[in-house]
Length: 371
Ligand SMILES: [Zn+2]
Image 1 (tube, helix red, strand yellow):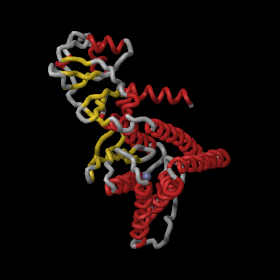
Image 2 (cartoon, protein in one colour):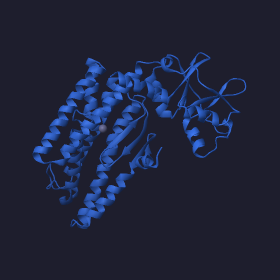
Image 3 (cartoon, helix red, strand yellow):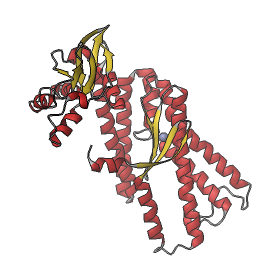
Image 4 (cartoon, helix red, strand yellow):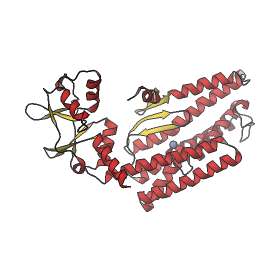
């Protein structure tokens, strides 16, 4: 992994609720610094800055609660959430696996906007306990908010807006997922994905056109975000469907090189440079697999000029096994989630072959050519 992508991924964990950590992406701090810097030039007085900071914190809390809505509903259905990541443009509950049952997917997607709807009621109701008594704040501009009641109404309004915005039936909004899950129950996944993709495209076109006509950059950006996400979503589902057509025995390598504990790194390095194999299984003197030499270790050995190092001095002792009938999409998911470089394919006690990531990428490459 390059240093740049490490930086892009860095975030700070602020708290953990129900076993799900809440993380702030580093660019969030950049945004806060930026706002403070510019607030000095835009004639903010301390009261306005106070309301504005309260609004930023309030918005952050509401977005986090929205994501916990998704994550806790997923947990209810037995699905784990790796973490919740908050970035300046959006929150993201990163589920470890997607729900197979469309009804579960529907409720998981709905839970987020429902949290905002509940918060909107809560903020409005509590604002009514304080004077002045009206439904909307005097000004819809946060820096012109002048009382606690107005501030609460403002947050109520923001939550209502978040709820409605998220219900737009286009990815990456929750509405896109709700639409697809709803259609899946009636039409099946393939048709549902196609229809919701078309609906998303129509919305993107409306936003971009509307943005151009009324000169609003935000709507244009939202339109392009929908187009971009639709493309990524289509690629992900193509990959899933393609890999689901194969099972482990279809692509496993049966004539793989067996490394022994006494071999040096020169042997796998040679084979890797010939582009023959990339990840290797290591056997002990009795012929039992005892570990794996992943591509990463071999690259390290080449880079550090330590090809005379013995395999037994540096090997990963984690061995993952799968049954011969398992589908490639499941194996690929497992490899991504657990950082597995090589999987042993077995039938009972018998070792049939091995599968690694390059083998999976290879089959995707071949299928892409067929398109
Ligand atoms: Zn959501």
